[in-house]
Image (cartoon, rainbow, N blue to C red; front, side, top):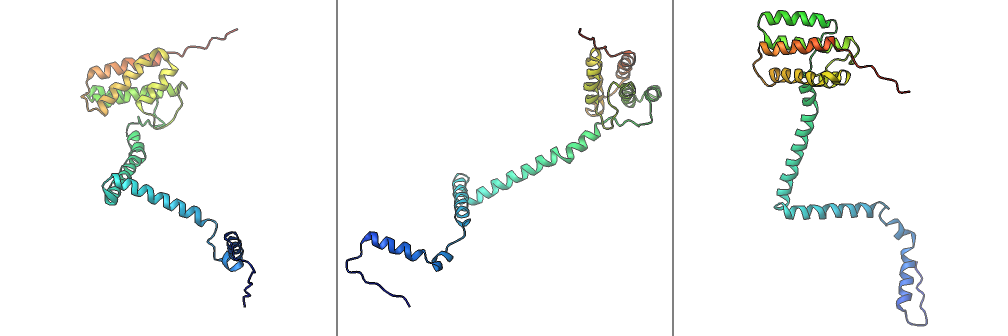
Length: 211
């Protein structure tokens, strides 16, 4: 049972505030308060709703905003697909794919047989493979699978700076024939053979010790 205490004087505003705080401090009122995380969550939800309303007002309403967000989601998915597995697949299709047991001279011999049969595109590819394997056999580039023509040109150019431009030209001819669908001819094979011979004969510059 509650006991009501009557004071002799009138109840002031300050007194009412003190009495209210005293009453709200009692356990039943404290137990009814929401948990500590409720207010930050409510604030965050309010901010999200406010941003949604603001965006919707500039995109033709909630339906227009939903369409815009859906379109952006599709774009993100397409970009992820393009730079993910598809990019790896595209890169794999451009690799030279050398057999680990085939030597540079084996590639040259096969290139010559293909050239005699006027299979110029295949002959060009074998000459570029011969260049790659020659550089690997002499440890001028690392032996690794999946190397592309332009990676070969970049790595070989660092090992043999005097032939960097020639190696880039070889990669360009190979790419135009195999990926640009340019018709290969005897001139392409002859030029790849010249670059291959130059690479085979080249020696890396020795570093000069500075006293």
